[in-house]
Amino acid sequence: MRSISDPFSPVAKSELAIQGTEPIPAEVYHCPKYFELERDAIFKCAWLQLGHVCELPDDGAFIVVPVEVAKTSILITRVKGGELRAFHNVCPHRGTRLVSDCAGRATRFTCPYHAWTFANDGRLLGAPDADNFYFDVSASHLPEVAVDVCGGFIFVNLQREPAQTLRQFLGDLAPELQKIPHAQATTFSEYTYEVQANWKLTYDNFQENYHLRFIHPRSGAAAGGPENPFGYPEGYAFHDPHRTQTIWSNPNPPVKPFQAVAFGALANSIAAAGGNFGVNTYFGVFPNLFVLGKGMTPFSQCIMPIAPNRTRSIIRLYWNGDDDSAAKRFGREYATALAMDIHSEDRDMIERGQQGLESGAISHIHFQSQEVLCRHLYNQVDQKVKAYQREQGDL
Ligand code: FES
Ligand SMILES: [Fe+2]
Image (tube, rainbow, N blue to C red; front, side):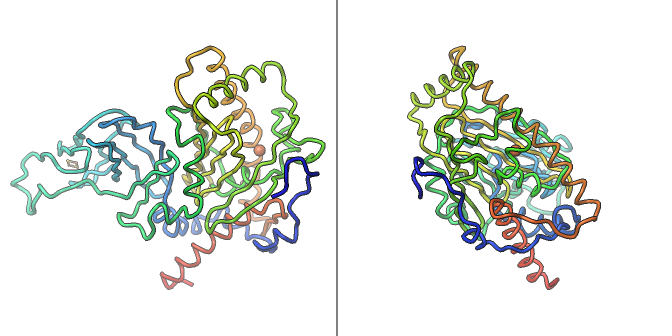
Protein backbone atom coordinates (compact mmCIF):
# COMPACT_ATOMS: atom_id res chain seq x y z
CA MET A 1 0.00 0.00 0.00
CA ARG A 2 1.34 3.41 -0.91
CA SER A 3 2.04 5.88 1.87
CA ILE A 4 -0.25 8.86 2.27
CA SER A 5 2.61 11.28 1.61
CA ASP A 6 3.41 9.74 -1.78
CA PRO A 7 2.02 11.48 -4.84
CA PHE A 8 -1.39 9.97 -5.43
CA SER A 9 -2.12 7.86 -8.47
CA PRO A 10 -5.34 5.92 -8.84
CA VAL A 11 -5.18 2.13 -8.95
CA ALA A 12 -4.33 1.15 -12.53
CA LYS A 13 -7.09 0.46 -15.01
CA SER A 14 -5.37 -2.78 -16.03
CA GLU A 15 -5.24 -3.98 -12.42
CA LEU A 16 -8.96 -3.38 -11.94
CA ALA A 17 -9.91 -5.20 -15.14
CA ILE A 18 -9.71 -8.35 -13.02
CA GLN A 19 -13.44 -7.93 -12.34
CA GLY A 20 -14.21 -7.82 -16.08
CA THR A 21 -14.61 -5.09 -18.64
CA GLU A 22 -17.86 -5.98 -20.39
CA PRO A 23 -21.01 -3.81 -20.37
CA ILE A 24 -23.64 -4.86 -17.78
CA PRO A 25 -27.21 -5.84 -18.78
CA ALA A 26 -29.57 -2.99 -17.83
CA GLU A 27 -32.50 -5.25 -17.07
CA VAL A 28 -31.01 -6.57 -13.80
CA TYR A 29 -31.77 -3.12 -12.35
CA HIS A 30 -35.49 -3.13 -13.09
CA CYS A 31 -36.80 -6.51 -14.21
CA PRO A 32 -39.41 -7.92 -11.73
CA LYS A 33 -38.42 -11.52 -12.62
CA TYR A 34 -34.77 -10.80 -11.75
CA PHE A 35 -35.88 -9.28 -8.43
CA GLU A 36 -37.80 -12.48 -7.64
CA LEU A 37 -34.67 -14.52 -8.39
CA GLU A 38 -32.61 -12.27 -6.09
CA ARG A 39 -35.17 -12.90 -3.34
CA ASP A 40 -34.62 -16.66 -3.49
CA ALA A 41 -30.97 -16.82 -4.53
CA ILE A 42 -29.68 -14.14 -2.14
CA PHE A 43 -31.96 -12.59 0.45
CA LYS A 44 -33.51 -15.82 1.69
CA CYS A 45 -30.13 -17.41 2.30
CA ALA A 46 -27.49 -14.69 2.96
CA TRP A 47 -26.72 -13.20 6.38
CA LEU A 48 -28.53 -9.83 6.57
CA GLN A 49 -27.69 -7.04 9.00
CA LEU A 50 -30.92 -6.17 10.79
CA GLY A 51 -29.76 -4.35 13.90
CA HIS A 52 -27.08 -3.44 16.42
CA VAL A 53 -26.53 -4.91 19.88
CA CYS A 54 -27.07 -1.54 21.56
CA GLU A 55 -30.73 -1.71 20.50
CA LEU A 56 -31.19 -4.69 22.84
CA PRO A 57 -29.14 -3.60 25.85
CA ASP A 58 -30.58 -6.09 28.34
CA ASP A 59 -32.75 -9.17 28.85
CA GLY A 60 -36.34 -8.66 27.72
CA ALA A 61 -35.53 -6.11 25.01
CA PHE A 62 -36.83 -6.76 21.50
CA ILE A 63 -36.85 -5.19 18.05
CA VAL A 64 -38.96 -5.93 14.98
CA VAL A 65 -37.45 -5.38 11.54
CA PRO A 66 -39.41 -5.55 8.26
CA VAL A 67 -37.65 -7.51 5.49
CA GLU A 68 -39.95 -6.84 2.54
CA VAL A 69 -37.68 -8.50 -0.01
CA ALA A 70 -38.24 -11.81 1.78
CA LYS A 71 -41.91 -10.94 2.46
CA THR A 72 -41.37 -11.19 6.20
CA SER A 73 -40.84 -9.31 9.44
CA ILE A 74 -38.26 -10.48 11.96
CA LEU A 75 -38.58 -10.36 15.73
CA ILE A 76 -35.22 -10.27 17.54
CA THR A 77 -35.21 -10.78 21.31
CA ARG A 78 -32.66 -10.83 24.10
CA VAL A 79 -33.58 -13.67 26.45
CA LYS A 80 -32.65 -14.32 30.07
CA GLY A 81 -28.88 -14.86 30.22
CA GLY A 82 -28.23 -12.37 27.41
CA GLU A 83 -28.53 -14.60 24.34
CA LEU A 84 -30.10 -13.18 21.17
CA ARG A 85 -32.84 -15.12 19.37
CA ALA A 86 -34.64 -14.32 16.14
CA PHE A 87 -37.99 -15.44 14.74
CA HIS A 88 -40.32 -14.74 11.88
CA ASN A 89 -42.90 -12.40 13.41
CA VAL A 90 -45.60 -14.95 12.58
CA CYS A 91 -48.00 -16.82 14.84
CA PRO A 92 -47.86 -20.58 14.17
CA HIS A 93 -51.64 -20.95 14.71
CA ARG A 94 -52.87 -19.24 11.53
CA GLY A 95 -50.00 -17.03 10.51
CA THR A 96 -51.03 -13.71 12.00
CA ARG A 97 -48.34 -11.03 12.38
CA LEU A 98 -47.57 -11.36 16.10
CA VAL A 99 -45.91 -8.11 17.26
CA SER A 100 -46.87 -4.64 15.98
CA ASP A 101 -44.38 -2.50 17.91
CA CYS A 102 -40.98 -1.75 16.35
CA ALA A 103 -39.10 -2.12 19.62
CA GLY A 104 -39.67 -2.41 23.33
CA ARG A 105 -39.41 -4.69 26.32
CA ALA A 106 -41.46 -7.86 26.76
CA THR A 107 -40.74 -11.37 27.94
CA ARG A 108 -43.94 -12.70 26.37
CA PHE A 109 -45.93 -11.93 23.25
CA THR A 110 -49.67 -12.59 22.83
CA CYS A 111 -51.14 -12.99 19.37
CA PRO A 112 -53.97 -10.49 18.84
CA TYR A 113 -56.17 -13.03 17.01
CA HIS A 114 -56.80 -15.99 19.38
CA ALA A 115 -54.41 -15.09 22.21
CA TRP A 116 -51.78 -17.79 21.85
CA THR A 117 -48.93 -16.55 24.04
CA PHE A 118 -45.20 -17.11 23.45
CA ALA A 119 -42.12 -16.58 25.62
CA ASN A 120 -39.36 -14.40 24.14
CA ASP A 121 -37.39 -17.59 23.43
CA GLY A 122 -40.17 -18.70 21.05
CA ARG A 123 -41.81 -21.37 23.28
CA LEU A 124 -45.60 -21.51 23.48
CA LEU A 125 -46.72 -20.55 26.97
CA GLY A 126 -50.44 -21.05 26.48
CA ALA A 127 -53.22 -21.42 23.91
CA PRO A 128 -56.94 -21.09 24.73
CA ASP A 129 -58.90 -24.32 24.04
CA ALA A 130 -55.65 -26.20 23.35
CA ASP A 131 -57.44 -29.58 23.79
CA ASN A 132 -59.74 -28.85 20.84
CA PHE A 133 -56.87 -29.06 18.34
CA TYR A 134 -55.84 -32.26 16.51
CA PHE A 135 -52.13 -32.03 17.30
CA ASP A 136 -49.91 -31.38 20.31
CA VAL A 137 -50.35 -27.63 20.60
CA SER A 138 -47.85 -27.45 23.49
CA ALA A 139 -44.98 -28.23 21.06
CA SER A 140 -45.75 -25.08 19.01
CA HIS A 141 -42.92 -22.60 18.65
CA LEU A 142 -42.34 -19.35 16.82
CA PRO A 143 -40.63 -20.06 13.47
CA GLU A 144 -36.99 -19.47 14.36
CA VAL A 145 -34.15 -18.18 12.17
CA ALA A 146 -30.39 -17.98 12.73
CA VAL A 147 -28.89 -14.93 14.44
CA ASP A 148 -25.29 -13.92 15.26
CA VAL A 149 -23.24 -10.79 15.96
CA CYS A 150 -20.04 -9.34 14.48
CA GLY A 151 -18.61 -5.87 15.10
CA GLY A 152 -21.71 -5.03 17.16
CA PHE A 153 -23.96 -5.66 14.15
CA ILE A 154 -26.78 -8.19 14.47
CA PHE A 155 -27.02 -10.43 11.43
CA VAL A 156 -29.93 -12.77 10.72
CA ASN A 157 -30.09 -15.62 8.25
CA LEU A 158 -33.61 -16.60 7.22
CA GLN A 159 -32.59 -20.23 7.02
CA ARG A 160 -32.86 -21.96 10.37
CA GLU A 161 -29.62 -23.84 9.63
CA PRO A 162 -27.59 -21.72 7.20
CA ALA A 163 -25.04 -23.33 4.89
CA GLN A 164 -22.35 -21.07 6.42
CA THR A 165 -21.92 -19.62 9.90
CA LEU A 166 -21.72 -15.83 10.06
CA ARG A 167 -17.93 -16.09 10.61
CA GLN A 168 -17.53 -18.30 7.54
CA PHE A 169 -19.74 -15.94 5.51
CA LEU A 170 -17.75 -12.84 6.52
CA GLY A 171 -14.38 -14.60 6.09
CA ASP A 172 -11.40 -12.28 6.59
CA LEU A 173 -13.74 -9.30 7.12
CA ALA A 174 -14.90 -10.69 10.48
CA PRO A 175 -11.76 -9.81 12.52
CA GLU A 176 -11.58 -6.39 10.82
CA LEU A 177 -15.21 -5.58 11.62
CA GLN A 178 -14.55 -6.37 15.27
CA LYS A 179 -11.95 -3.58 15.41
CA ILE A 180 -14.14 -0.73 14.13
CA PRO A 181 -15.72 1.83 16.52
CA HIS A 182 -19.22 0.48 15.75
CA ALA A 183 -18.36 -2.62 17.78
CA GLN A 184 -18.24 -0.55 21.00
CA ALA A 185 -21.13 1.79 20.21
CA THR A 186 -23.79 2.30 22.85
CA THR A 187 -26.12 4.46 20.77
CA PHE A 188 -26.57 5.88 17.26
CA SER A 189 -28.27 8.57 15.23
CA GLU A 190 -30.47 7.21 12.46
CA TYR A 191 -32.38 8.41 9.47
CA THR A 192 -34.08 6.38 6.82
CA TYR A 193 -35.27 7.33 3.38
CA GLU A 194 -37.05 5.59 0.54
CA VAL A 195 -35.80 5.85 -3.00
CA GLN A 196 -37.76 5.01 -6.15
CA ALA A 197 -34.94 2.87 -7.47
CA ASN A 198 -33.56 -0.66 -7.49
CA TRP A 199 -31.46 -1.66 -4.48
CA LYS A 200 -28.30 -2.23 -6.56
CA LEU A 201 -28.58 1.17 -8.19
CA THR A 202 -28.96 2.70 -4.72
CA TYR A 203 -26.00 0.75 -3.36
CA ASP A 204 -23.80 1.55 -6.38
CA ASN A 205 -24.19 5.26 -5.75
CA PHE A 206 -22.18 4.74 -2.56
CA GLN A 207 -19.55 2.53 -4.15
CA GLU A 208 -17.87 4.96 -6.52
CA ASN A 209 -16.26 8.37 -6.21
CA TYR A 210 -16.60 9.14 -9.93
CA HIS A 211 -19.70 11.28 -9.26
CA LEU A 212 -18.40 13.21 -6.23
CA ARG A 213 -16.98 16.19 -8.04
CA PHE A 214 -20.10 16.66 -10.17
CA ILE A 215 -22.99 16.47 -7.70
CA HIS A 216 -21.47 17.22 -4.29
CA PRO A 217 -19.76 20.60 -4.58
CA ARG A 218 -22.35 22.15 -2.21
CA SER A 219 -21.97 19.67 0.65
CA GLY A 220 -18.22 19.43 0.18
CA ALA A 221 -18.31 15.65 -0.17
CA ALA A 222 -16.06 16.02 -3.19
CA ALA A 223 -13.24 15.77 -0.65
CA GLY A 224 -10.47 15.99 -3.22
CA GLY A 225 -7.18 17.78 -2.69
CA PRO A 226 -4.43 18.91 -5.05
CA GLU A 227 -2.81 15.46 -4.85
CA ASN A 228 -6.05 13.60 -5.64
CA PRO A 229 -8.58 16.03 -7.13
CA PHE A 230 -11.25 13.37 -7.67
CA GLY A 231 -10.96 11.85 -4.17
CA TYR A 232 -10.35 8.40 -5.66
CA PRO A 233 -9.67 5.59 -3.18
CA GLU A 234 -6.15 4.45 -2.36
CA GLY A 235 -6.96 0.82 -3.01
CA TYR A 236 -9.62 -1.84 -3.55
CA ALA A 237 -9.80 -5.44 -2.37
CA PHE A 238 -12.22 -8.29 -3.07
CA HIS A 239 -13.20 -10.84 -0.45
CA ASP A 240 -15.45 -13.43 -2.15
CA PRO A 241 -18.90 -11.79 -2.10
CA HIS A 242 -17.65 -8.80 -0.06
CA ARG A 243 -15.42 -5.90 -1.04
CA THR A 244 -13.37 -3.19 0.63
CA GLN A 245 -11.81 0.09 -0.41
CA THR A 246 -9.30 2.25 1.38
CA ILE A 247 -10.66 5.75 1.51
CA TRP A 248 -8.19 8.49 0.68
CA SER A 249 -7.92 11.14 3.39
CA ASN A 250 -7.21 14.70 2.39
CA PRO A 251 -4.23 15.68 4.59
CA ASN A 252 -5.34 19.35 4.52
CA PRO A 253 -9.12 19.34 4.38
CA PRO A 254 -10.88 22.71 4.22
CA VAL A 255 -12.53 23.06 7.65
CA LYS A 256 -14.86 25.94 8.53
CA PRO A 257 -14.75 27.24 12.14
CA PHE A 258 -18.11 25.71 13.15
CA GLN A 259 -17.01 22.39 11.64
CA ALA A 260 -13.88 22.53 13.79
CA VAL A 261 -16.13 22.74 16.90
CA ALA A 262 -18.23 19.76 15.75
CA PHE A 263 -15.32 17.57 14.73
CA GLY A 264 -13.30 18.56 17.80
CA ALA A 265 -16.13 17.36 20.07
CA LEU A 266 -16.45 14.08 18.19
CA ALA A 267 -12.69 13.55 18.22
CA ASN A 268 -12.51 14.04 21.99
CA SER A 269 -15.43 11.73 22.59
CA ILE A 270 -14.02 8.96 20.39
CA ALA A 271 -10.52 9.27 21.85
CA ALA A 272 -11.98 9.07 25.39
CA ALA A 273 -13.69 5.82 24.42
CA GLY A 274 -10.43 4.37 23.08
CA GLY A 275 -11.50 4.84 19.46
CA ASN A 276 -9.18 4.50 16.51
CA PHE A 277 -8.88 7.32 13.99
CA GLY A 278 -6.64 5.31 11.70
CA VAL A 279 -9.29 2.97 10.34
CA ASN A 280 -10.04 4.23 6.87
CA THR A 281 -11.73 1.25 5.36
CA TYR A 282 -15.04 1.02 3.58
CA PHE A 283 -16.48 -2.48 4.05
CA GLY A 284 -19.03 -3.57 1.45
CA VAL A 285 -20.68 -6.52 3.17
CA PHE A 286 -22.69 -8.65 0.75
CA PRO A 287 -25.50 -8.28 -0.05
CA ASN A 288 -26.78 -4.93 1.21
CA LEU A 289 -24.68 -3.33 3.95
CA PHE A 290 -21.76 -0.97 3.84
CA VAL A 291 -19.81 0.30 6.78
CA LEU A 292 -17.41 3.18 6.95
CA GLY A 293 -14.83 2.42 9.61
CA LYS A 294 -13.54 5.98 9.76
CA GLY A 295 -13.20 6.94 13.39
CA MET A 296 -14.73 10.40 13.34
CA THR A 297 -18.18 9.46 12.09
CA PRO A 298 -18.59 5.67 12.28
CA PHE A 299 -21.25 5.07 9.68
CA SER A 300 -23.36 2.26 8.28
CA GLN A 301 -25.95 2.10 5.53
CA CYS A 302 -28.26 -0.85 5.10
CA ILE A 303 -29.96 -0.89 1.73
CA MET A 304 -33.22 -2.82 1.96
CA PRO A 305 -34.92 -3.83 -1.28
CA ILE A 306 -38.71 -3.33 -1.18
CA ALA A 307 -39.66 -3.82 -4.83
CA PRO A 308 -37.73 -3.93 -8.14
CA ASN A 309 -37.83 -0.12 -8.21
CA ARG A 310 -38.16 0.76 -4.53
CA THR A 311 -35.56 0.72 -1.76
CA ARG A 312 -35.27 1.83 1.86
CA SER A 313 -31.91 3.09 3.12
CA ILE A 314 -31.20 2.97 6.82
CA ILE A 315 -28.33 5.26 7.70
CA ARG A 316 -26.73 5.21 11.11
CA LEU A 317 -23.89 7.07 12.80
CA TYR A 318 -22.69 5.23 15.86
CA TRP A 319 -21.66 6.84 19.13
CA ASN A 320 -20.19 5.78 22.39
CA GLY A 321 -21.76 7.13 25.60
CA ASP A 322 -24.21 9.96 26.11
CA ASP A 323 -24.09 13.33 24.40
CA ASP A 324 -23.49 14.89 27.79
CA SER A 325 -22.20 18.27 26.63
CA ALA A 326 -23.54 20.86 24.22
CA ALA A 327 -20.42 20.50 22.04
CA LYS A 328 -20.86 16.73 21.81
CA ARG A 329 -24.54 17.04 20.97
CA PHE A 330 -23.72 19.62 18.31
CA GLY A 331 -21.01 17.34 16.91
CA ARG A 332 -23.39 14.39 16.57
CA GLU A 333 -26.22 16.49 15.12
CA TYR A 334 -23.87 18.18 12.68
CA ALA A 335 -22.38 14.87 11.49
CA THR A 336 -25.89 13.48 10.95
CA ALA A 337 -27.09 16.62 9.16
CA LEU A 338 -24.01 16.55 6.93
CA ALA A 339 -24.69 12.94 5.95
CA MET A 340 -28.32 13.84 5.17
CA ASP A 341 -27.17 16.79 3.09
CA ILE A 342 -24.86 14.61 1.01
CA HIS A 343 -27.54 11.98 0.48
CA SER A 344 -30.12 14.54 -0.53
CA GLU A 345 -27.77 15.40 -3.39
CA ASP A 346 -27.45 11.72 -4.36
CA ARG A 347 -31.10 10.78 -4.26
CA ASP A 348 -32.27 12.60 -7.37
CA MET A 349 -29.51 11.00 -9.46
CA ILE A 350 -30.36 7.51 -8.20
CA GLU A 351 -34.03 7.99 -9.15
CA ARG A 352 -33.15 9.50 -12.54
CA GLY A 353 -31.02 6.43 -13.23
CA GLN A 354 -33.98 4.15 -12.49
CA GLN A 355 -36.28 6.20 -14.73
CA GLY A 356 -33.86 5.94 -17.63
CA LEU A 357 -33.23 2.23 -17.19
CA GLU A 358 -36.94 1.39 -16.93
CA SER A 359 -37.58 3.07 -20.27
CA GLY A 360 -35.84 0.11 -21.91
CA ALA A 361 -33.96 2.57 -24.11
CA ILE A 362 -30.57 1.04 -23.39
CA SER A 363 -29.74 -2.64 -23.18
CA HIS A 364 -26.48 -2.24 -21.25
CA ILE A 365 -24.70 0.11 -18.87
CA HIS A 366 -20.96 0.71 -18.50
CA PHE A 367 -18.60 0.82 -15.52
CA GLN A 368 -15.16 2.43 -15.71
CA SER A 369 -12.20 1.09 -13.70
CA GLN A 370 -12.98 3.38 -10.73
CA GLU A 371 -16.50 1.92 -10.60
CA VAL A 372 -15.06 -1.54 -10.00
CA LEU A 373 -16.96 -2.08 -6.75
CA CYS A 374 -20.27 -1.65 -8.63
CA ARG A 375 -19.09 -4.25 -11.13
CA HIS A 376 -18.09 -6.59 -8.30
CA LEU A 377 -21.57 -6.33 -6.73
CA TYR A 378 -23.21 -7.10 -10.08
CA ASN A 379 -20.84 -10.05 -10.63
CA GLN A 380 -21.63 -11.49 -7.22
CA VAL A 381 -25.38 -11.05 -7.55
CA ASP A 382 -25.48 -12.50 -11.04
CA GLN A 383 -23.31 -15.50 -10.12
CA LYS A 384 -25.69 -16.34 -7.28
CA VAL A 385 -28.80 -15.82 -9.40
CA LYS A 386 -27.40 -18.07 -12.18
CA ALA A 387 -26.33 -20.76 -9.69
CA TYR A 388 -29.87 -20.73 -8.26
CA GLN A 389 -31.40 -20.97 -11.75
CA ARG A 390 -29.14 -23.96 -12.54
CA GLU A 391 -30.18 -25.61 -9.26
CA GLN A 392 -33.83 -25.11 -10.21
CA GLY A 393 -33.19 -26.48 -13.73
CA ASP A 394 -34.14 -23.09 -15.22
CA LEU A 395 -30.86 -22.45 -17.03
S1 FES B 1 -53.51 -16.67 14.60
FE1 FES B 1 -52.39 -16.31 16.38
S2 FES B 1 -53.60 -17.15 17.91
FE2 FES B 1 -54.73 -17.52 16.14
FE1 LIG C 1 -22.78 10.78 -3.56
